[in-house]
Image (tube, rainbow, N blue to C red; front, side, top):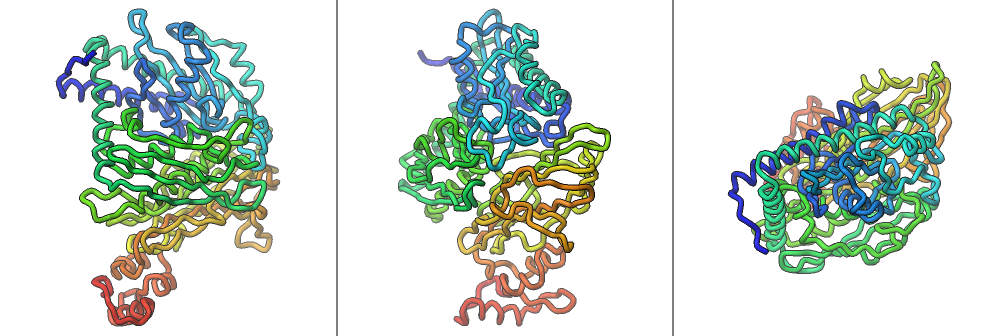
Amino acid sequence: MSRRQVDPVTVEVVTSGLAAGAREMGITMRQTSSSTIFNEGNDYSCGIFNAQTELVSHGEFLPIHLGSLPYSVNYSIDEVGADRFRPGDSIILNDPFRGGSHLPDVTMVTPIFYEGGLIGWGANRAHHLDVGGTVPGSFYAQARENYQEGLRIPPVRLIKEGEIDEEIMNMILANVRLPKNMRSDLLSQVSANLTARRRLIELVDRYGLETVEQCMATEMDNSERRIRAAIAGWPDGDYYAEDSMDNDGITDVPRTVRVTVRVRGDGLVVDFTGTDSQVEGPLNSVLGYTASGVYMTIQAATDPTIPPNGGCYRPVEIVAPKGTIVNPVFPAACTGGNEIVSVIHNAVYRALAEIPRDIPNPVRLMAADQGSSNNLFLSGFGDDGERFVLYEYPEGGWGGAEGRDGQSAIYSIVGNTWNLPVEAIEMRYPLRIDRYELRQDSGGPGEWRGGLSVRRDYRLLAPSGELSVLGNRVRVPPYGLFGGHHGAPARYRIDAGTPAERLAAPEFGAKKSMVPLVRDQVVNQETAGGGGYGDPLDRDPEAVARDVRYEYVSRRSAFDDYGVVLDDDGVLDQELTVARRRTLRGGTGADTPNDG
């Protein structure tokens, strides 16, 4: 049956209303939650779905969640039963093997009814400070199975016809370390979905159900058409690349994601055949996570102005062999799956870099970003006897790209969270931030420099505490592209710069749980910088001189990596720079336009 045509103005108005509703879902969560990870960090995602469970609109929150949210909605329908949903119900789940991501990410799914019929779904996913398991924060770096990582919740009705099922709520809260926070945060998730319900029903009241459904379908078709048009401009071919994580937290051996992007006409296949088998430790990415990493990379490589919705997913097929780190089988540990999604993203981007550049609309590329969420937990009991758990994920650098340097001090590209303000940390936790600064020379040298990472120092003010870290890019730094150098690797230390200095995680670089701390010890975290793009000897010398003035780049790096010579006052010496670059190029005598 052909769809009734709706005029473009109405489509734009209705879909903009849906997008505003999805954003308002996030605002609701931020304003009604208790935990810093919600109301300061914005570690959540929100979406509105049609009755057929296609993602119609979402807020500008975490792309790492969005590809897997449809999996959660569909698992909820399959396991609860489509005929059992009632107005006012809300389903809770966090099982990674039922459409989730990792256990701390809790999903809430709410059916939306209108005049007795199902017209859509509101769904959100948010990271909770603790969901039980072996360690505070539920990121056990040496976990060997999912059971060690926390409470696993299959799809169940937490809210039944508008009433909280207190038996289920109490069962959940009895298994976590911060029950007051979790109850408040769960109810903020329910409130967010009620916002979606209210806004969708308002649109249906105003325009009619048929018109709203047609607008949804038209918007998704438009997004699909634009993604296909971008892909059609790429030459057919098989484009291969790989990227690796440091290790799995159990064995200090790099683990590799291998991917072939097969471009055929206006569609493509992202094939992970050859990727390493699932690992013993918690660095496995479940299928929904992997899908998120693929979808967001393809959209970033095509056109960021395309409205993000389920239509963007249609031209992309994913082949993820079971039993690998991109599609593990239960009961694989997978808390660190967000780390693997960064590796997946960078591997797919690296494969797309193999597509020829001399085409009318080349792939939008950048070198590797910091490639880690930099997960850090500080926990313990304050002087008042109250338990605290701080979850931090400091920013790093993005990779350089054609025509621009990488962004500095920004969350990894798979996420879109905000930094936790120093004031919020010091007000809520027995901690003091001694240093918070950009890390000089952390951006990979290139014609377009990688973004700088950060250093953040946490001083413990409680009698004792514990440090847990689960990160990446200590052993395998973020790669550069087209002659650009890699970004600086990450580093985790305790009491840095003192005689007592030691590595926080000496065995595995960035994977260690429950490192004991005492009052006044300082945890030093340095995140990884972005990779450089293009030969650093082609960088404008004046840009290098400016970077030195701003202390982004040291004089030593300017001389060694960029071939730029500055006098004692930091002024560019054009003649010596030309000579220095000639020497670094191998004495060929061939100068470039940027040699001064």
